Image (spheres, rainbow, N blue to C red):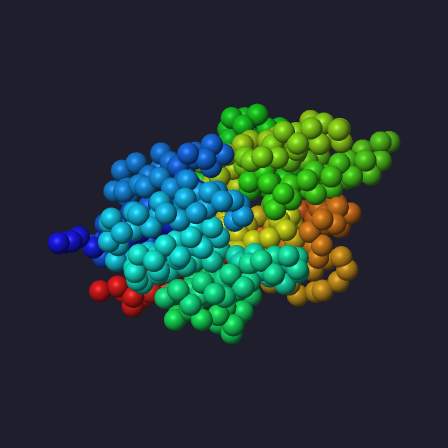
Length: 396
């Protein structure tokens, strides 16, 4: 006879929960639930967060997740997950990430576990997505919504679409995982931090944060900055000197290093890899660059705003939930907190926008002040209160 209430969190890679979901873990534990976590703990590029699970009380289950939905291995993964569900007899399944969400919901249905929550951190079908994405992913999500007791969307575009066309029992909008505003109050010595990272003290610091994968589109910024360097008049010199830092790791690491060398800009770029001190790195930056092709509600962008950084980013779903535009022109959308680029791969537009801001430091400070205030509307307190209501509605 089962005498312990149990909840299962499911994500594709193990770093997801310690990075984004510890607030939900705490809520469930405070409600008296034993929290289990099924994920792939052996993926080299994504396993760096595993040590954060130590001392959390979370019971870990290895699932050999892959990101490719068309691999036959997904049948084995489905069987692994279903076996764990039947063995542990969970009272709740809360799944995240596309493949985690698909396989967990199918396994939970077979194991007769309910309720099932799926948090969609950005559907693969969205305004501007390829027809292939719509043909592949939209029908799957629409079908799986029938097996979903609670569907949580983190941006308004996904929420409106899910509310109108999907069949989940409940559909709610919650703006991301929430920003811990208290982190902003932990000040760092900027000079010492730059010295620690080997960065020049006298240059404007441009910052990007995100995996080194195609979706994050770091290549466009590197090419845009190379273009800026080429446009500087040798006799007069550049009106400013900048240094670009990229925080993140991924499969494009070697490619991006070579690209910077080929464009003769490697001396102006530092690849810092995966970082656990981002709250300090935001404080040494002057401008945040976020050229993603696709996002749900980008936490990196929200954190940059909370630290008072002006932003140049692509005008995409999620990012434009955070950055409210007021002047729609070509090729920019002007915002109180920065500039959004209409086409994420428009190198020239990114170059122009960065140039425009770097020559007006007063404008950058004004934008940063706006972003600092705007970020408070996405605080973790609101998100926590919303998640408590959802869990209490679904659980005994």
